[in-house]
Amino acid sequence: MSAISSISSLLSQYESSISGSSSSSTSNTTSTLLSTLEESSSSSVSSLLGSSTSSSIDEEAESLFSSKTNSLGEFYSYAKKLSSAADSLYSESEDSSTLSYDDISAFVTSYNNAVNYASQNSENINSNELSSIKKSITNSKSDLSSIGITVNSDGTLSINKDTLSSALSNNASTVASTLKSVASATKTSSTKLVSNSLTNYTSSLKKSLELSTKICEAEGTSALLGQLVDTTL
Image 1: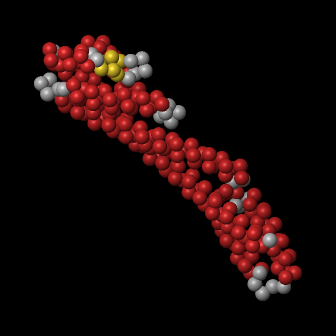
Image 2: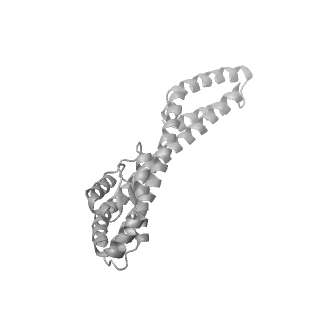
C-alpha cells in the first residue's frame, strides 16, 4: 500500500472512531491509531517522506539540482548564441568584401561568454564540444595572432582593434580565409554543443521537478499528519 493510501486509511479509521463512540472507546481507539501512525511514519510514510534526515537530504538535493538546472539552462543559451555567431561569421567570411570588424567582434564575444560561463560553472558543466572548439581555435593561434586576435591562456580571445582593422583594410582575403576556417570548425562542434546542452538541461530540469514534487507531497503529508495528531490530542 502506498504512503498516501496508508494515511487515507488511517484517517478513515480515525473519523469512524470519533463518530458515535463513547469517550473511553474513542480514547483507546485513538491511542491505537496514534501508535499506528507512528509506525506508519517510519514505514509506509517514509517511502514518500523518508526520515526527517532523508527529507532534509531531498531538499538539499532539490536545491542542488535547481542550481545545476539553472546553470545548464544559461549555458544552453550561450551555446545557441555561439552557434548563431559562428554561422554568421562563416557566411560573412565567404566574401572578404563584406566581412566587418563587428562580425568578428560578435563571434569573439559569444565565444568568450560561453567559455567563461562554462569555466565559472565547471561543477555543473563539462562540455566535450566546447573543449573541441577551444582546441580548434588554439590550433589556429598563430594565424589568428597575425590578424590581431590573441588566444589567451584561459582559452578566451582578445582583439587588438588597430591590428585587426588594419588587416581588414590591407589584407581582407587573409582575414576572411583564417576566420572562415575557424568558423567552420566552430559551426560543426557548436551544433552538437547546442543539442547536447539542451539534452542536459531538460534532463536536469525533469529531475529537479521530480524532486520538487516529492518534497511538496512530503510537506503536504506531514501537514496532514500534524493536523490529525493535533486534533486527536
